[in-house]
Every structure is written in structure tokens, then in C-alpha cells.
Amino acid sequence: MALTTEHVLDALRSIIDPDIGRDIVSLGFVKEVTIEDRRVSVVIQLTTPACPVKDQLKQQAVDAISALPGVEEADVSMTAAVYTPANREGMIPGVKHVVAVASGKGGVGKSTVACNLAVALAQSGASVGLLDADIYGPSVPLMMGADEEPEFDGEHIMPLYRYGVKLMSMGFFLEADRAVVWRGPMIGKALQQFLNDVAWGELDYLIVDLPPGTGDASMSLAQLIPITGVVIVMTPQDLAQKIAYKAVLMFEVLGESAGRPVPILGVVENMSGFVCPKCGTVTHPFGSAGANVAAERLGVPLLGIVPMDPTVTAAGDTGHPAILVEPESVQAEAFRSIAGQVAARVSAVSMAAQTSS
Ligand SMILES: Nc1ncnc2c1ncn2[C@@H]1O[C@H](COP(=O)(O)OP(=O)(O)OP(=O)(O)O)[C@@H](O)[C@H]1O
Ligand SMILES: [Mg+2]
Image (tube, rainbow, N blue to C red):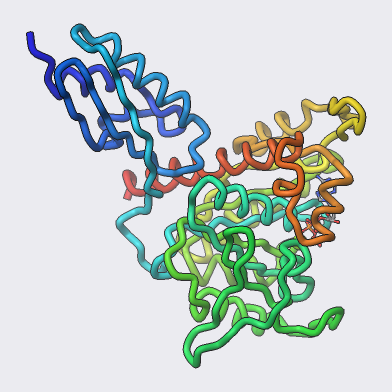
């Protein structure tokens, strides 16, 4: 019996995307099937280039095709196109997903996570923007080593560009060390300009670094645009989880008042244990089960754990995110893995929203 496209598709139906929970054929991921004699080539298009199970899915596809009778060679190419729901009401033109990084508390590493997440997603091949929504205490200029004043072409503000990421921050418009004294409504106005008047162009992900707490910026953001999801950053000391829990509740309330849900993508536990400078082992003085327990109690996935390490602090202070300074380090690996988890959750959340609407 001659080998047909249907045979190949049937074999590929056994492969389930673990984040979405459906097979890759019914999800429409299999874009091309070519059969030449005993050689089968397929193209599989994932919903994000940062897919954490890309290699695993590729291997499964090679195995499934190779097991078909009459196949001598299976050639599987993986590509990606970031998924965006058909209903784009209220979204920034060209920007597929807005992902906010938040916490109930200051100083837990939101900006550090936001910068490393943005660079990691860009390194995976996605087009990425990073918006510093901390109007009073912007961190992005220092952490990304960017402080020129952006150009304005009379209509749009041009984002700065570092490490493959488009950047916008109030810090670009201020003299160093000058405090901003603004009232709430002005924060909303500034954010609105940053969302609508910046030439973001085509972006797969716009990462928004929020200021701490339950303030005006979070509220304005939720009201101004649909947010695909929020990453909550916490530290092990928050183990009472009250603060992270408060943040989760806040986005629920913000979603209700904005008339559209603001899903929580998951939590990141930052400064969790420390890396031994000699042997690289991670020690957890506050215990290591905390993040899992916290995530479970909050009812959201754990996206990853980042250990405390002086190189992360130093990297942030010198304008080079840790992921670039020591790409092989435990912290860099943690940030890359978190980026993969975030991207996978973004796909899952937006595909679920599409199916249910
Ligand atoms: N994993 C880490 N290891 C070591 N230092 C870290 C780590 N994460 C963050 N830091 C450092 O902790 C400080 C606070 O981090 P960061 O500014 O990212 O927090 P934040 O939550 O954004 O703070 P804010 O609430 O003020 O916006 C920074 O000096 C940063 O370099
Ligand atoms: Mg910050």
C-alpha cells in the first residue's frame, strides 16, 4: 500500500501538545507534508518560537513518521508563528500579546524578570517590546543600558533598541536621578501614550514592567488594553503568600472593572536560594518547596525559580541582563526556561479564550 499524506497525518495525531492538551494535527500545526519515494518531509508550525517542548515534539514527529511502513527517512522542520486570537478589539495594532510583570510588593525582582524575559524571548526568535510602566521609579534604562532620548517624528515616539528588544521608559525623558511627582490620572495618560503613540511595529510580545503594588499603573493598563496575562513575581520570604495572593486578587478585580479578564499566567519565585560560587550548587535557606506550594495555593502554575546571585544584581546595575552576561549560568538557564513557560502559557490562554468566545 502506497504511503499517503493521510497516513502521515494519522501518525502525527498521536502527538499531543502538552500545554494545550490537543494533538498537533487537529491544532493545525502540521503545515506541509511531502512524500518523495521513501522520504517524508513535514513542516510543523508552533505557536511560539520559545516553545519549551520544541525539541521533544520534533523527536516525537520523527519517531512517529519513521515507524510508518515504507518510510526510510523522516525530515521534520519546526517553525513558529505566534498565535493571536481573531478578536483583537482594543489591542494595539501589530502587537499580538501584552504580558504584564507584577507583584504585590516592591523590590522582589519584577524589573529583573521583565528584562531577562524580554531578552530571552527575543533570543528565541520572537519580536519583543519592553514597556517600563514604572513612571515614578523606572528601572529599564539602567537594566538595559539605554538612556538616549527617543526620537519623535511628529506622530510617533521611536522606541530605543537593545539586545533585540524595543524599549520605552519614562526614564528616557528624564534627567538622571530626578524624581517624578505626578498624580494618578497623569500616570494613566503617560501609559496611554506609551501604548498608543510609540512606534512598536509588529510585536509578538510586549512585556510590561509594572511598579509594585496595586496602584494606578496596573489599573490604567488593565483598562487601556486587553492583557493576555500577568506574571506574578514573589520571593520565598513571601511564603505567607499573602502578598502574591493580593496581587492575584487585584487582577481579578481589575479584570472585572475593565470588563475583560486579566488571566494570571503563573508565578516566578525570585531570589530563591543562592548559587555556590565555587561549585554552582543551589542552596535554599528558606526551603525549596515553597514556590510549588505557593503556586498550588494560588491556583496558578509555577513558571520557574530564579536563585539569588550577585551576578544578577551586577548585571542589572551595568545594563546587561544576566542572561547575556553568563548565558550558561543557573540563573540564565532559569530565565530562559521561564520565558519558554510564559510563551507556552500565553499560547494556551489565548487559544482557550478563542475557543470559549
Ligand atoms: N535573582 C537575583 N539575584 C540577585 N539579585 C537580584 C535578583 N533579582 C533581582 N535582584 C536585584 O534586586 C534588586 C531589586 O530588583 P528589581 O529592581 O528587579 O525589583 P523590582 O521588583 O522591579 O523593584 P521595584 O518594586 O522597585 O520596581 C535589584 O538590585 C536587582 O538587581
Ligand atoms: Mg521594578
